[in-house]
Length: 274
Ligand code: 5FU
Image (cartoon, rainbow, N blue to C red; front, side, top):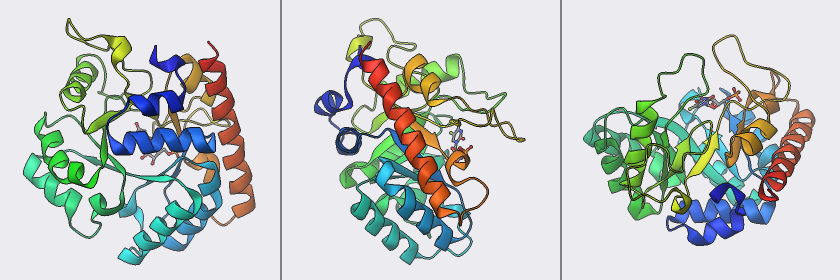
């Protein structure tokens, strides 16, 4: 069963370069922490990433939040990615027709495909959203996550929708490396003939926090233990639980990142020891 295997063993079974690189990074740095950095000023954005980078396997961005964005921010982000050995995940949530998403992914102001190892898409348009993104991303050795579930109260991404998302991933296994979801998806809605023990989707999970149960706008938090051990997810995404309400408090941010890294890793060690 995939959730009992080590990240390093799973890296050997993957074929997508971004999935392999992520799992190898997790094993090498001993972290399953992805820090989500949603701040409007690029100076704060880069300072937080420089502070949390050593504790992270992945940094999650929403570059459209940056009010002073210009492409030099990306160049600095790429330098930090090399300096601290993490991958980049632009949480773009593509959700349009194939032709439109190819243009949005490759070009525009942000040129996401050029620098983001991993991005994600809503399955709502159907398989053409994956085909469109794959036409840009595969030649660049990128990986895609499908949003099979969300962390918010009242999400519509459940039941038959979630099952259809997993089925869509099975049909595009070279590019779709896993899901944004709240639990393991191996075998979910599988047609006869699919061996769920052979599936190895990466589960990247937002809605993680140790201090709060949620926010005022529908976000719901669970602990690393609940996410990694009880639900079998692979990567914890933590945003405000780490950078809090003061993006300048770099020492505090660093110590929180270290705490989440330790919690996430000890939960993982509990899990793989059965
Ligand atoms: F797909 C999702 C989801 O289901 N829930 C989320 O919270 C994405 N997110 C993102 O994770 C959201 O856009 C934020 O960037 C981040 C969570 O931030 P927080 O500060 O830890 O709540």
